[in-house]
Length: 92
Image 1 (tube, rainbow, N blue to C red):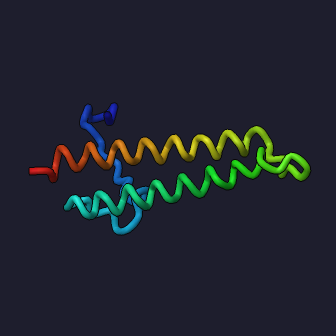
Image 2 (spheres, helix red, strand yellow):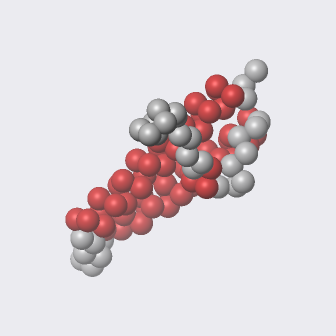
């Protein structure tokens, strides 16, 4: 909400979805979700190495671990937003 004009402000976050982010079909939605899921999965696999190798831990800081987890939470929110947009604006 813009406090000066009391209008809603829409922020374009399509860059978070990748692949051009045109969610105009079920196929495009599926591709966006697949890209987000792959990104999150990759991030979590990297984080898993922090705990998997007990002899040679990577010693990530708490701040870095928090950032990794937060990025996955943001990706999950992106999926929710993409599906919500599709259901509201595209799905017949």
